[in-house]
Length: 321
Image 1 (cartoon, rainbow, N blue to C red):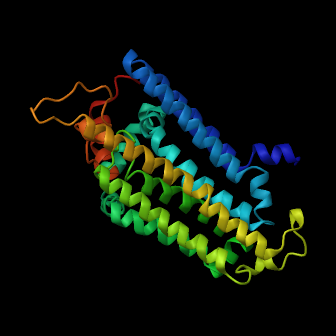
Image 2 (image 1 turned 90 degrees about the horizontal axis):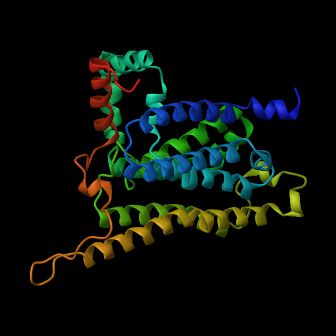
Image 3 (image 1 turned 180 degrees about the vertical axis):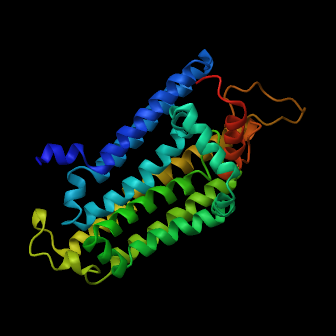
């Protein structure tokens, strides 16, 4: 097949197109019941969702993926795009219900009934509740990051495509699990309070910085697959390539963390300004509080939010179908 055909039939692009089609179908159903006041927020989430899909395709099905086999810093950029760009964008986009509603009603009823009532899924739901705990999510995300960058496992990903794809899936999935602890993603909502969210993100960033320090201070290349290359694009040495990879993790990889911390601190200071004064009066609010603080869904975990909704669909049907 030609290069263009290979690109069009590549799994990342095909999967992105399928998911985008389901999302678009679900959004059309949502628009029927969306009020004018909520239309702007819905459009914003749609744009963020497509930005997330574009990031995933760019990371996994573009020249970036080809160069990642020759340049370690490009491979690190690929990882940063999945964990620190695509993952938080997916959480902000909250595509879960639109994608679910994009399925035919009969499929939703069958899948929902299977998930809620099948004895085989009880263990899965129990495990899901444990994985949704903030501390467990933090440990899994950072353990995954460090494990895949251990030389032995890293070499394995470069020599076996299936392992390489598993690595990318784990980065994206565990990235979503991490960011959903601190960002609202209706019908799922962050379980941590504001100060805890900032600390949570800062400690996650510190773990990534520690990996960058190890790569930057290593006196010799850590990964034989890159060290043994006869030539690299740009004429870089293996050690310079590794130092650039550390810079990618430390620099661009820190940007999403920094954005979150600054926005969270700004909102915290803003809420302090709106606190009651000495006379017990509160100035009129000019900004809406985050959904996790003023919604009946505050504190929901992923595994607590979906089963009731699925059970409702299977028992009562869906009027918007």
